[in-house]
Image 1 (cartoon, rainbow, N blue to C red):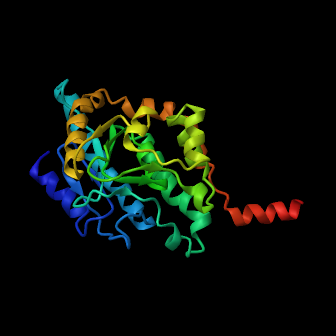
Image 2: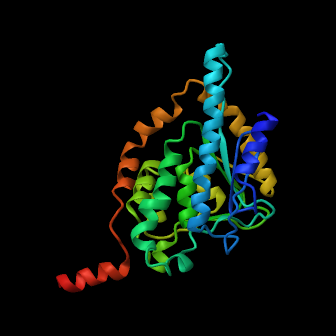
Image 3: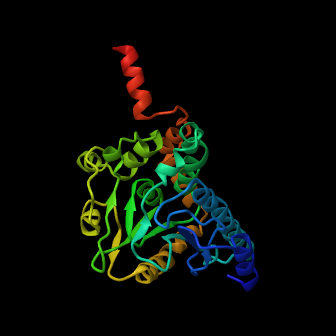
Length: 281
């Protein structure tokens, strides 16, 4: 990547470091100007900041891919992107959505998933180059879904400090949007593991998550060790982007998920569900 492009990326996302950073294989951090109120949770603003960062990455890749086609460079057009939790710490990839604060906004329930989070999940599911989640700590709830929307997941092995993957909505009474259930079915085909994740809120250690197929690799060490492994892996698969078909195939592979997330427009929560049951019974 050229120095001019580095400057462009830095100008686009200049500011404070956020919960996640989107990295090209050459490890260029894209940090948003949004500082979430908690270092471990995702806010709507943080999530919104990731989407334009992905647009910058895709634009750069497509320019390189087109140039490679013109010059008949068969090795040109390589690409991959890494999403990593906040660097400088190794406790959290993401502890999930900042649910307590977000739900204070009356528009959160009807608007957040169909207008903010689901579009990001769809973007990742159909992204035209390989996506790698570098999971450098706890990976809970919405953070786990974000990682599952990526093509590959590389996580700390938890030997330095504890780290778990968990969908814990069952424990605090939050219904899943359609998008979450659709992603789980697509990425975790074993119904026994689906039950553990969705209905039991099981906390998977990295080794357990690797064993049931939630992860592709685990790494001993801190955030930089996880990122180094993710970087090496991303480089090794970046050639799969050269044909230009990666995203097209994924759109068909995950068509059911993409369509389900587009239908996620009705407010769904335990209070509304109980009110409907009360009226029915």
